[in-house]
Structure formats: C-alpha cells, structure tokens
Length: 375
Image (tube, rainbow, N blue to C red; front, side, top):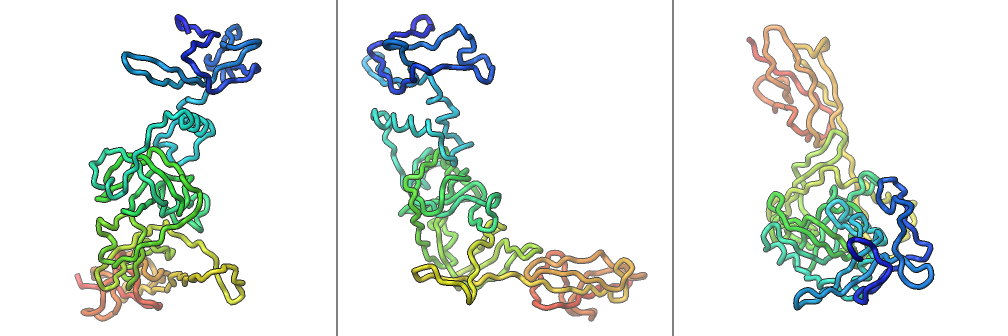
C-alpha cells in the first residue's frame, strides 16, 4: 500500500492465509456507503490472470531490535461481530469465522499459552483479577423460557468445579450442559460474600456428559466458605417451608442434627422427570432411584365474624395452601367494638393470633374467629 492506496503487488514480507476466488466482489448491499460503494472502484487483486482477492494475511514486521508477526484481514474474518467474545455473547456458540481464525492462529503458533488457575487459588485473588479456569459444569443453563417443566438452572448463570472447589459463573445462558468439561475466562468479583466469575469467554473442551458426583456434607457445613460453589448432597429434617399460594416451594430449612441450612429454590427447580406407575416398563439397564413428588394440599378456612360482619355477611371462606401464608378477608366491623384480629378460638383469652404473615400448618379445614374489645 502506498499513500493509502491499495496495491496489486504483495511485499515479500506478506504471506497470504485466505484468498478469495477470481469471482470475489464487494457490494454495498445495505447502501451505507461502505464496501466499495463507488462502482468504479475495483477490488485490489494480485497474481497472474484475473488475480485473487487477499482476505487474510500475515506480515513479519521489524521494529527496533524486535520482530513481530502481524495478522490482518480485508474481509469479515476479523470484524468485531465475528470474533468478539464479550459479556453480551460469552455463553453463545461462536460463528464459523471465529473458529476458522482461532485455528489459523493455532496453526501458525501465535496463540499465547493459557495459564489455568485452580478454583481454590482463584478465590484467594483480589476482586478484579482476570483468571482462566477449567472444570466441569455442575448446573445446566436456565430453560424456564423454552422448557419450564424441566428447568434446573438459575437465571443467566451456572456453576463449575474442579478438584479444588466450585464457583459461580455469570452471565452464561446457553451452549453449556451439566457434566461438560469447560474452560472459562473472566474477572473475579464478590456477591453477598461469595466469590464469582464475570465470564468473558466460555469454551466447551469436551461435549461428553460426565456429571460430577456430589460431595456429601453435614448441614451445618453446607454453607461454609470451603464448600461455597460445590455441588453437595445432604439430608435431614425439613422445616420452615415457604411456599407460594399455588403450592410452589420457594425455600425450606433442613437439619441433620449438626445445625440448620436453608435450601433456596425460588421457583427455579420445577417439575421435570417422568412419572412411574405399576404399568411403566423398565427401560434403564442400571440401578436407579425413584423420588416421591408432593403437591401441597389446599384447605378451606372459615372466617367467623363472631358477632360482627364481614361486609354484609357473618362469615366467609377462603382456600389456603398448606405451608403458604393465610389469605385474610376484609376487616370485619361490629358496633361498639374494636377488631383485635383473627384467632384460632372464639374464647377471649386463649388461642393463637393469625395474620397475613402466618403460615398454614394445620392439615385440615378449620375456623378462625374475630376477636373484639369494647370501645
């Protein structure tokens, strides 16, 4: 190139990597004024006959006492759109040009050696540090929008672990399945005390599904820093279950005697699986487990105004799901009295007060009574 003009003669320092055929042309399809919009302008060609168009090449450049290899492209092979691996597409499969160019870089030996850290070592580094990790994905991406009945993933993030520990990765929304061996590069940060990796690049090293065996831990140790990010398994007595009105469980507490831990679901884990009955034919040629599935029952709650009125009636009824919070009717009224709340008995000085924060723990239909105090 001379004075900014293209040349048809290649310097000896330039080595072509990708050439276009003699029929290659450039057309301004989107009419944006780029891409040889001037019909009189011709693509620079080199070689004998009609010549070929140079799309990608390397050039050895000497600067001072150093020599460098420069890779340049005249086509779309190195545009930001083709090879960008930024936060907006880190979890997406790349276009073919991305793979083509990376293979070329590997072939000519210009790809810098990747230094892979262990997860345990990465967690000791300061926030803002950029690291590359390799391990197994321990969660699949979220499928609530495409297949909600089998979703087991959190929104826009997954987990991975190696022999030293586990860590949260975000944003990752597609292209990775639980059990695949992956390599990720990103920036370390903290979220509510948990070390996480803001991903800038994800590479699936092995498409084979080889799920990680969960680590068995006591409930008291499940939330310790050493186990944060790990795929774990525990067991114990369930309590403090929090559910929606439709019975969907959001969280619960489990304790094996060593101390409690909270299991957080928040609607991410849904139904999935296949129902097995006495008529189901065994098709799995290995030992396996079946799991009971439960749906919270609904019970009719009668609200007795106990001498007053709820609107124009003396009582009303509502259906409430077990373990969900009570749904209370409108505040009742009674001439000469002040409403003190809803109680489990009509007797004045006993029973339990029920509010909108109270969870239904009586597995049968029952009545709540308005309690009154004279003005």
